[in-house]
Image 1 (tube, protein in one colour):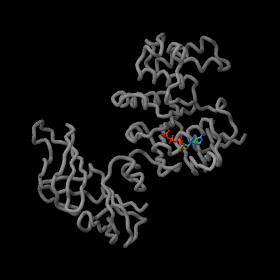
Image 2: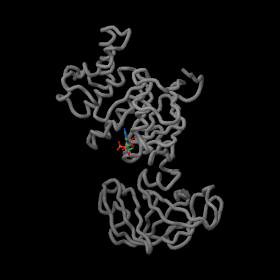
Image 3: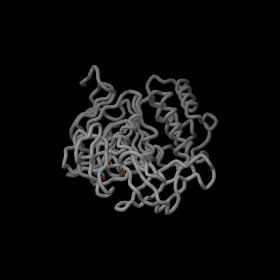
Image 4: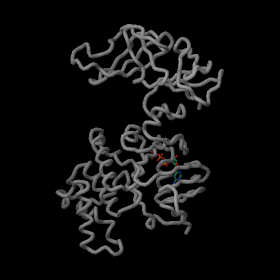
Length: 368
Ligand code: ATP
């Protein structure tokens, strides 16, 4: 078996997967470091589960190689990999107690005495705060607690890598938010590397150290949540992660440190972040996040200001989302409400005449 001496904890090298003539995963190259929470994020059918299944050993790549902890995984069966997969359905046994479910995978672990096994189960129940539910059956606990049973069972085997397929999908929104933090805290305490498959961009942003954004079997961008949000590399990533106002534009000239663009929908020229790939005359996209759009009653100083009026607004308490009609475009702006708890808390009201503006540093130029 080939062994690499150094390198990242997990290296996925040119991995593709074909089912007949259909290519589900296309030439994926990724590295994951020890102790990371790494997410595979993408829409339905983009190939994220197939990639996860290849890491687990349930599928063999059609091309490419996977190295885990320096070891080539080609031909290594699932049970010999230091990897455990937690399924979306949790796959816990309804007739067994919580403790028996957690200890299930330890039965055949060599060199583990009955007492060792009981100690490991107790440790895991403590980790996921289910000690007091040890003797209950799965139907006697909540959905969030069942999720923790599945997590404890997966971690009991002490995998080096834990694969989690949509770990929070079965929980309702409120519980999901709470459980995200719990999952992060458990990961930190165990130090196990987590790879999480999700289609939920907010979940990926909250949980992950880094995210791989996937589309049609390919990895489109890899980065920290901030990198993929603030510096999307393509229209696809900008649109997939969060909301965005996007406009067709043409590059006019470099005006260091900015790039001058002509944007018909905004009624003229704007200054934007420079992009090394942009050349004068080139058609590009301009992307601006709604929360980067400023709203003011008076014309602000500086570039990138357009007059319009508030067409719609949604009040969320701490902030409001405005749809502002400009002469040739409808834009979204997200603004934090003032601290005062009265009607004046909003920056603007229905039909108000306003100016929207944005800083050149918030204006993202996309050539791909
Ligand atoms: P979802 O979020 O819906 O589960 P996904 O991103 O996890 O989507 P995959 O399950 O990896 O997507 O599937 C990627 C593509 O490969 C899909 O079009 C799917 O139909 C196809 N596919 C997956 N497994 C097989 C298989 N065993 N045989 C044939 N096609 C498959």
